[in-house]
Structure formats: structure tokens, C-alpha cells
Length: 263
Length: 354
Image (cartoon, rainbow over all chains, first blue to last red; front, side, top):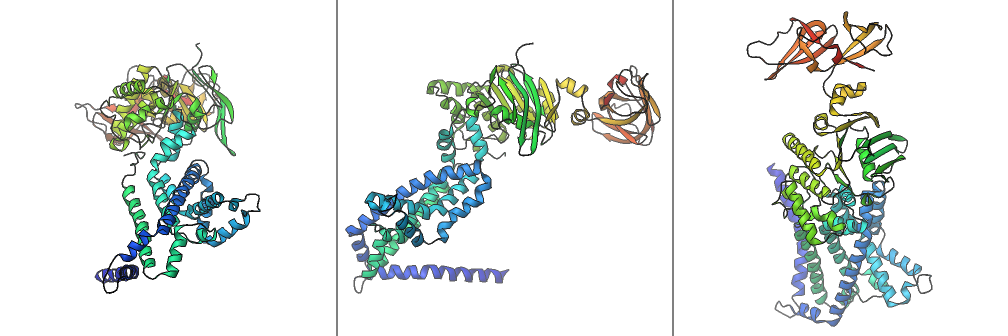
């Protein structure tokens, strides 16, 4: 028993070291811009850079559109599958996992071939079209996370009975989804939204190949040309991601408690 | 006879090759409380769900107040329903839950608030409006579900095993409350249950279902005392079944374990030599010869269970055992196992099961 505990601690410490040592080293390195003293100069330069602000804003807006698109697609789909087509669940789960298996570069090359300026659907012929295509691509990349989050949320409520209870009280599908289902899976949807946000903020491949002024390509560009700023940027991106994760944890405490189970 | 309020006509429901409801017919009068009673899988909930509109009949039609509603969507039927799992919306307060149907119907807020308060009074939970469902007990949640169902003044109230998830004590008090509210509002109600005591205690009529069919429809008294089929007799109440052979069809004499019993007028269609199943309710049997009981059988006391006010005695008659209950009398000790005993009953109480 005692031995087991000792080895558990050894494994934990090794894992923590593997995770934290590079992080601490990056933080330490990012603060060494001024010779001989630690300073936040690299952070000041990065945060004051107009391109940082522009690309970050671009990615934030892209993330918001991606989240809206993801919610509009995933919530009704996951709801309908739970309600009427449970036999399709394994198939849909498999499809939503594909973006984890197929590299983003394959997806984006497919987009370029399919939606080039000479194609019947010339998304890439205009800036707006390309931005829309980027958002669609991001929604695809975020699909595994958004679907799982929403599906897990739906699992905590009795979807069928709540739907029937609303129907018999006169509600149509719009009312059922907006006033019964969505409020009860809102925390799950928000979890999916924050995961989507974290993915979009750091995404490089799609934005770069579609030549969009996003935060990912900016990170790469700075990384290739500067010494201390990339480390500061990496820490900033890390803080944003962890901020999103923490928000998921905090929000999950406010999830409506299910009263569907008999006590 | 007045026009029925709800008429279920030749309704059939199949899922693929499996037929779960076959040729189901029932007329329900306005304000009547009818229970669907039967074991799991008998089709009672499926019939209820077809009335609600959640399932579409494969054949037949459902008419409410003279209007064919068979193909209407659930939200177009003006029917209230209470579910076994309460189905309160967890994100809404009690008052918001009750007001849900009123809001959907477009009732002005002031009127809806008044109606919610009225409903909370009816279910005797006037202070609970601001609570969330998870803050309530199971019984309270089900009362809120009832208030929510009747708030929009539905034409028909459907109760799908609403008491099954509750503990025994709450179940009894809530069923009485449901019945009293139903009588007060005069709302036509269909109640699905597998609990015979529930059905017998609160229904105007009961439809006993088995294998997707209504085996018998009748008042609780008829169902209990005059079961039409072997299934109804066995399913409702406790029954002692004895096998007998018709010895003289003309005089109605049957031999039960070498003893003759006269069943005048009960052997319609039976011939001498036929084997019959004869059934007796425990409360129709007395220990020893009693005045007014025209038939008797002899046997031996097989078991005695002292239950306080009641003593349950099992008497072996040939290869069969008959249960009967007698009241405890402090002056008379209960019979002993192994004693010879005679049981008596009125031949009119003997049921011949086909």
C-alpha cells in the first residue's frame, strides 16, 4: 500500500515536471529581454504591437462566428439524434471524430480545390467568402469538442420526456429548443464554446493557407524572426487557453440541477 | 346514451412486425375517470401515447368531443399529461413551469399569474412558486406536474403512471388528491397504472388490458367481482383457483377433488366431463359452515399466518390449496396446522373461468 503510494507520487512528480519545467523555462526566458534583469519588456512589445491587436481581434471574431455556427449545427443535430435517431449515434460520433484524424492541411487543400475562384461555389473569390470558409473550416475542426460537450449535456436531462412535456403543453419545435433544451444544456454548450475558442485562437494551418490575418500565422511569424517575443506570446496564448478551461470549470457549477430523477 | 367525450375506435398500433395494440375500442363519458390497468407490455401506455399524439395509430381513429384528432400533432390537441418521471423543466421555477403552457398559448401575464396562483392553491402548495424542481420532494414535484398539466384547461387529462416513482405513503395520499381535483374540475381523465389497488380505488371504470387488447371494461366492482376472463380474474385481486370436472351439466354439478359442488346456472355451454377452472376470492370463503353459504368443501389446515387483525389460513383440498382470511378474535385461538377443516362459500360467488 505504502509502496504503491510512493510510486504514485513518483509518477505524479515526473508528469508535473514534464509539464511545468518547459513552461517555467519559457516564462523565465520571456523575461530576460533586458540584459541582466528580469522584465516584462517582451510582453509590453507584444501587447503594444498593432499586428498583435489586429490578428488577435480577427481570431476572436472568427472564434465567435465559429461558436455561433457550431451551436446552430450541433445543438439541433445532437438533440434530434438523441430524440429520434438514437441508432445513428455511433455513425455521427464517428463523423465528428474525423477532424481529429484528418489533418487540417488535407481539409484546407480540399477547400481550396472545391471552392476556388473558378468553382461553382467560389468562396475564395472574395475576402468575405474566404473568411466564411475559414469559419466553416474552424467549425469542422471544433466539431469533435462541441459535439461531445453538447451530447454530454443532453445526457444529463431526460430529452424525450421534457420534449413531450413541452409538446403536450402546446410548444412547437422552436420553443422547445430555445426554452427547454438549450437552457438546460447551456453550460455544456459554453464548455464547447470555450474549447472552440481555444482551438481557433491558436490555429495556424487553415488561416495560413487561406492567407487570413489570424493570430496563429502571426505567432508563427514572430516566432521565426524574434527571440524573446515568441516566448511571451506562447505564455499569453497559454494563459488564454487556461482561462477558457477555468471558465468551463466555474460555469459547470451553475448547471441547472436535474430534477427528473425520482428521489 | 350521451355522446362519448373520448372515443377510441378500432385502434391498432404496430412497430414493424410487432403489434402492440390490436383493435382497441373505448368510449369515455365527459368527466369520467378511466384507468388502463395491466402488466408491463400490455399496450396501456401505447394507447395513452396515441391519445396524446406521441404515437400515430396504424389503424383506427381517436375522437375527442366529436372531433377526429387521430392525425393531429400533440401540441394541437389541447390535452394535459402527467408523466411518471415528473418531467418538470429543471431550469424553470415552479411558477414558471405551471405558466409554461399558458405562456405558449399567449395568455397575458397578469392572467397567467392569477391562474398559476389558483393552481398552486388547488395543489395546496401556495408558497412554492419560487422554488426550483430540485428543491422539492417527489410528491411535490408530481403535484406541480399535475398543476402544470391542468393550468391551460385541457379537454382531456392523461396520467401516465404518475405515482409509480413515489413511496407508498405519498402514493396513497396523492392518488386521493388527484381524484379529488379531477372531480372538482370535472375533467375527463385517463389514468395508466399497473397497480390494481390504485385503479380499483380511484376509477369510475377500468379497462383491464392484456396482449394489446382490452380484456374487460367495467366498474371496479364489476372487474373485481365479475371478471370476464381468466386473465382479469388472476390479475385483479387474489384468487383461489380449483380445477373441477362437470359431472352433471343439467343440474350444474361439478366435482372438485372428489367432492361435489352445485353451481346452478353457471355452466353455460359446458358438457358433462368437461374440465373447468373455478375461482373464489379469499373474502368469499369462511372457515366452517356459515349460514347463507350453500356450498362447502373439506380439507386440512396447511398454513396459518397471524397478521394482527387478520389471520390468513391456507387449507389443503386434495391437491389444491385455498387461501382465506378470518378476523382475529382474542377469545378464539387460530386453527392449528394439520386440523381437519371445512370451508363454506356461496355458489353464487364461485367464478367459472373460461
